[in-house]
Structures are given as C-alpha cells and as structure tokens.
Image (cartoon, rainbow over all chains, first blue to last red; front, side, top):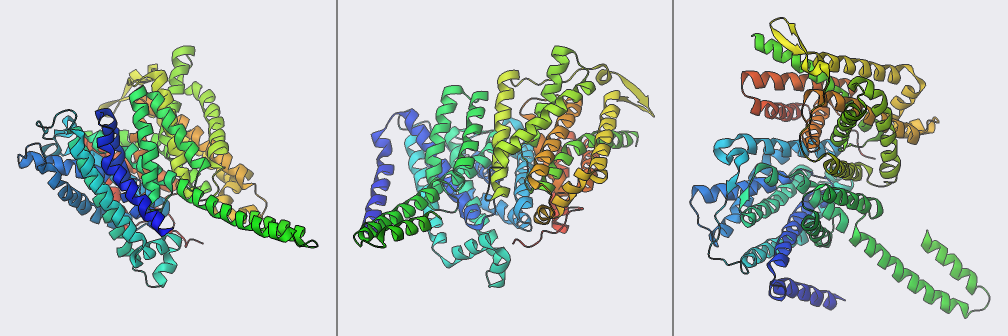
Amino acid sequence: MRIFKTVGLLVLLAFAIGFPLLFSNPAVTTIAVFTLLFAAAATGWNIFSGYTGYIALGHAAYFGVGAYALAIMCQDWHIPGGYIPFLLVPIAGLVAAGFAVPLGGIALRVRRHTFVVITIAMFFILQLLAYNLKSLTNGSTGLGLPIPTDWSGDFFNIPFYYVTLAVLLVAIAISWWVRHSKYGLGLLAIRDDEDRALGLGVKTGPSKLAAFVISALIVGMVGAIWAYFIESIYPPFAFDATFDVAIALMAFLGGLGTIVGPILGALLLEPTQQYFTLQFGQSGYYLVIYGALFLVVILLLPQGVVPTLRARWARFQVTRSQQEVAVAATTIPEQGESTGIERKEGINL
Amino acid sequence: MGIIVEAIITGLLTGGVYALMASGLTLVFGVMDIINVGQGALVILGAYLSYVLEQNLHIDLFVGLLITMPVMFVLGLLIELLFIRPIKRDRTMLSILVTFGVALIIEGVLNLIFSTDYIQLRAWYITASFQLGGFYLSYVYVFDFLLAVVLLGGLYLLLYRTKFGHSLRATMQNRTAAELVGIDVERVSAITFGIGIALAAAGGMAFGATTAFNANSAYDLISRLLAIIIFGGMGSLRGALIASLGMLVIEDVTSVVWSPVWASTVFFILLVIILLIRPQGLLGQVEGRKQ
C-alpha cells in the first residue's frame, strides 16, 4: 500500500513537471498556471483555516500585499523583466507575512463569526489603502510590472509554470509537515475545542498566529507571481473579494483540513472557472453559473470530495468484509441468516 | 463650523437608512446564528425592484415598498427553506458561503438584466430641496429617515409587544430552551429571515434614492454593514442603530474636514481600535464557551 502511494505520487509529480512539454499550447498552459496558483493559495489558506477551524475570508488582502510588494520593488529598484523578479517573490511573501502579524493578532482576539467578519473588514481596509495611498500604489491607475521581452509567445508561460509549481510543492511540504507534527496536532485541538486545548497546555494564541502568518506568506507569494504573470495590477483585481471566497470554496470542495483537498478543489474549480470566463466573459452568466455551482457543492458535498470518498471507501471495505462474514455464516444452517442481517443493520447505522 | 453641522445632520439622516439594512442583518444573526453576507446584494435587488416599479408602472417609490417588501419577504422565506435549512452541520461557516453563492447569483442576474451602468431612482423629492439653517437639504433624506423611524419602530413593536416577538427573542436567548418550551424554532427562523430581507428591500429603496448604484455596489454595502454590526456588537439591534448613526456621522465629518477618499478608511480604522479594546463590540455579549 505504501509502495503504491509513493509510486503514485512520483507519477503525479512527473506528470506535473512534464505537463508543459505534453501540452505546449499557450492557452492550455495559461490555465495550468492559474490552476497551480490557486492550488498553492488554497493549500496555504488551508494550513490556517482548515487546521484551526477559523475561517478567514480576507486572505485576498495578503494576496494583494504580495502583488503590490513585488510591483513596488520592481519599480523602485528598476528591475528588468526576466528571471530576477522571481527571486523577489519570497521577499514579497515575507512582506505579506509582515502585514499578517499585527492584523492576525487583532483578528485572532475574537472567534467564530466575529473573526470571519473582521477578516473581511481588514481586507476592505487594505483595498481602500491601495486606492488611497496614491504615492505608493498609484491609486486606481494601477502599477505596471516589468515585461520579460526576450520570452517569446510559446515560451512565456513556462517559467511561470515551474516557479508556481515550486511554490505549490513548498506549500504542500509545509502543509504535510504541519499535519504530521505536534504543532499541527495543537492546531487540530484548537479546531475541536479551543478552551480544552488551552487547558491541556497548547499555546493557542501563538499557534494560531503562526499558522495565520504562514498561510499569509504562501498567499502573498502567489499574489506576487500572479502580478508578474498578468503584468499590471489595479486595486480591485489585486484585492479581489471573489478570491477570498474562491480559495475557501476550493478547500471546502476538496475537503477542509486535508492535505490533498484544496489541491483537488483547485484542479476541479479553476479550469472550470477559466472555461466559463473564456466562454461568457466576466458577465452575468458567469456569476450565475459560479454561484449555482457554489450552492450545489456546499449543499450536496458539505464535507468535501476527499472526506466523502474516504468515508465511502471505508464503508465499502466494511460491507465487503461483512459480506464475507455473511457468506461464511450462511454455511452454518441455523442462526447464520439472522446474524448476517443484524450485522448489516449495525453497519447502516 | 457650519459645514460640520451640515455633515453631522446628513450623517444622522443617512445613518437611519443604514440602520434599516443593518438591523435585518443583526436580527438574522441573533436568531439563526448565521451571517447573511448576501444582505448587500439583496439591498441592491430591493433598489432595482423599486426602480422597475417606478419606471414601468409609475408607482411612487415609497408606495412601491408595499409591493417590494412582501415580495422580498417571500424571497427570504424561500432562501431560508431551500438553502439555509438543509445545512445540518457546521451551519455558521457553511451559511456564510451559501449566502455568498446566493449573492453571486443575484449579482449575475442583475448584471444580465440591467447591465452594469449606474442608475439612480427618480422622484420629485429627490431633486427638490428645502433650506435648513444655512444650507439646502434634499427632501429625500428626511423622508428616508422617517421611513427608517417608522419601520424600526414597527420592528420594535413586533419584537416587544407581540407573541411572535416573544418567541423570536426567546429563540435569540437560547435556541434549545426555546424549542423545549414549545416554540417552533424553524418557523421563527424562516420568518425572521424574511423580515431581515424585507427590511433590506426598504433600505435598498432608501439607499437608491440618495446614491447611484449598480449590481457591484453590493460589495461596498456589505462591507459597511458587516463593519456596523461588529461595531455595535453582533446580534444587538440597539448596537446596530448606534453604530450606523456613528459610522455615517464620522464618515461625513471626515469627508468635509479632511478628504472624501479617507472617509470610510477612518471608520474602518476606528473599528479596529474599538475591537482592540472591546472585542465583542459596543453592546455585544461575550461569546460563551462552545459546547
């Protein structure tokens, strides 16, 4: 089983690395880059919200801070288009993480709904600042990023693809490490019962804040790559309310608090969204379809794909072993039939 | 000095309209323990309904509320029955996402029907104004404020003087206990949601009469409404009232003494400061331990 898992993961990794070679069409690779960006952002978001149960709906704030940080660095330091801006992506992520320290500190003083609403409010504060701090952000005119002129049409997406893939792998590694560490167990304990976790010696405050900052770091790096990829940024696109909810929806669809869930959610949703955008533009149809999809996902699969499948699989295995028992039981003439039925009912409960 | 007084007066008058929209939001939160992030979109939907009635049937905006409010009440019942009641686990979080989905659909439909051009409602009292002290004030601000007073007064009577109001407040205090004494909590929830949406419709008309809007105005509105209900303390009607008036006065004063672009930023920054001192908001209650 373990061998299968390792081989499977290696095959997936090889496929991810080989993808741009298999599908060199720029339209396809563009969708692939966006999908990987969202997969990384959703994974980052999940490290905080999925593990601690605190649903943050303001991570677009850190996405925007990362985007603006890269744009401002490139502009002030006169950095030409090419590979150098990629080296600044981690710095942009750190800037976003720097913003997350005080903002997270304030937001995490409250719980549940109030926390959700405060994260939304903070997102709007930063969006307003992007509009109003004209000397830094150039207001609603937006900022341009250096354009890598020597990358031709077919090649253009390739560097972005691999850089984003690298960020996604780092995010997955962090997510995996958190999930399997004592620190991560502390976060899960906070999700289940925060006061009891505190009573048992989990340092809930610093744990939550650290997870918040880590997720902001990843989302900030994603924002920086995104800004460089689309070459110019404006306040409503860098600080986009639908981004907040998109990454949450991806994590919910795939399975909140699982490692694979957010990635699966992004793989399912982002290409769909890109397809709808191509088909209908950013028009009303697109919003209606996306909203309806949203309702369907949440009402039919509230636990997400991964946990639902896992539960199905477990039930399937149990029923199979049950059937074997039942088959064995029927060979014993007297009581066999009845015990088989009893057991089956027990499973259905 | 004169302009500051003027700013305070207009702030108080428009604050009444925000109180109308925010009261629906905070009421739904208090009873059902969910945040309806679709409230902004529903407010805009209400404004568009009034617009359609006025344009096509020439029904006065305020008279039109007699039609739009019941329609929106029924819409609220339907949303509650179809999308919110089926959520069994993790209601709090999932309901936020569900109501966001509803908001997206409403925004999409409005964009399809009306395009994204800004529109403003039309009536004689929107263009006519009267002199008050040293400045002119449009009649619509006063009418809007009176509407808010009437509806909020009606809400008060409903909550404190009727049997339904008693059931509603009992559900707010303790859902399980209310169920145990024989209150049909599900029915109370559905009706409360309907009332919240009907208030949004009235607020939408009042908002559309003073401000040009399109479907995307919902984002700006919901951010303000959420800020107002946190500021006032979630689930507290009185808090929402104080916060609405306070927010609009602060905004209007900031925009005349400093600059209009910083007006809402100042309010949001004030909100963060308040939360540092009082995380539960002005009149909110400290969250009990999760069972």
